[in-house]
Image 1: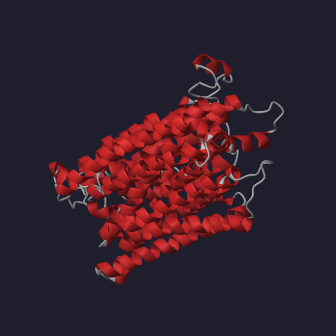
Image 2: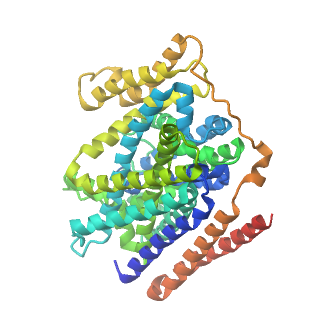
Image 3: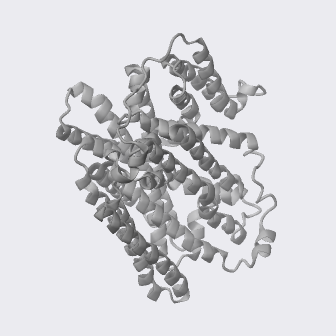
Amino acid sequence: MQIADWLVLSLMLLTTLLVGVSLSRKVKSSADLFAAGGRSPWWLSGLSAFMTMFSANTFVVWGGIAYQHGLVAVVINTCYGIAALLAGYTVAGRWKRLGIRTPAEYVERRFGRGALHFYTWFMMAFRIVGTGGALYAIATLMLAAMGNAGGAPILSATQLNVAIGVFALIVIGYTMVGGLWAVLVTDTLQFIILNLAVLVVIPLSLAGLGGPSEILAAMPEGFLDPTSARYTWFFLAGWVAIHYFMIGAEWAFVQRYLCVPTPRDARKSAFLFGGLYLVSPLIWLLPPLLWRIKSPIPTDADPATVTRIAETAYIVSCKAVLPVGMLGLMLAALFSATASMISSQLNVFSGVLTENIYRPLAKTDDERRLLRAGRLFTCLLGAVIAVIAIATPMLGGAAKLIISVTELMVTPLLAPVLAALFFRRIGARAIWWTVGVCFPLGLVVRFTDWLAGTPLANPTFTGVVLPLLVVGATALRARGSGREVVAAPVTQTEGDAETVSDDAAPLRIVALCLAFCGLLLFALMPLNPDHRALLAGFGLGLLLPAGLIWRRARGRARA
């Protein structure tokens, strides 16, 4: 990396922090801290949900699959879009109509205090560990980007830990002060940075590969197949189902449905999320797909070497073509993707600890006291994430094991919660039976060969189909209905969205971010004489919408 790259990276990190902190004026109560006061514009919620799916692991895992297997990586990621559209159509509006402040409140009212504690501590433990692994992953990618000519990293372990600490402090800082408003707006800022960096990489990656016919001829056999021997149509169907339950019921996503003014806005945010995931995977996975043509897998490479090449394909492909200063922007984009995931988990779990654990124990409704408690929980959880990230090398395969178990538990954990939105007969018994049957059986399937040759040996069957069968069976055997119907309707009507949404400030921030990025590209032109036209084109392409959005924000402010 050159000095310009370091400056760009530092500017982007500082901008993210300042934007988050500037939104602290909007946080006057715990409802503002954890639900944006129910005034978030739908488009802000949708973009935030989109970014919540990203982390540095996204580029390592899916970039590696795209490099090795081709188009199937794109198809797998479009499954998120299908799942989000289904969630928007079926459950997003239902969540908002409940009138709850946090998803944990629904769990407590519907299933009881025991279920609340189970979900809180179980999900928090696994999500925090996974988030710590993502923080470590962004540091690992930075090592790959900052390697010297021989490919060796230039940072020591101590410097790496310092980098983890700095990244953690930035995310903790703006999440603690600005709450969900900061999470939503910085996610949108990060959406802009990520897509700008990727869009600049694509034309540079295409250069020198010839026309479409030459590119297609150079691709390995089967590179454009939508499935593979490992990623079959049955796998894809299961992937859609798993992520339908995740996007429809996991707390970080439910929070996005609760922070908007009306049920209609909740549906629109989910539809935006889903629509983006139908079209964007091909865009942001194109660099490793093209890199496979420019830098094929060596014929004599062993499996470990292939894995290493695949996992670093994304950042290496970008590093090979980006102009001076743009590598810093790409690293800022990778950090942004990870920061979005971290801030979302920090906010949702600090909200649960404050509203559903601390408030009943302290028996207080003092908003100043609750704000202090929420910010303290944010700091404590952030510190735990940073410690886990630093300890990841010492954990060996433990982190991967825990993340695998978490993925295994998505449908068994969330299917009863989602089903209870539709069926009164679903009670707490559905949770205990589903987890009690599917979790041990899933562990057996994943880590032993005891059930080899039986239908239960298929992870998709065990992780998706079986939990649904157990939930259905418990519902049929249930007597009466669930513990309680949550019936605190929202006060806004469908037609009130324009009057209660608070989108003038977010629009202004988005406009300023676009303008800042456009001016940054113009500033890099003297350093990149061979890419001036490209940088100028993208710069103008950012300044024009910045002006239009700023004008709309002024109109909103006057209204």
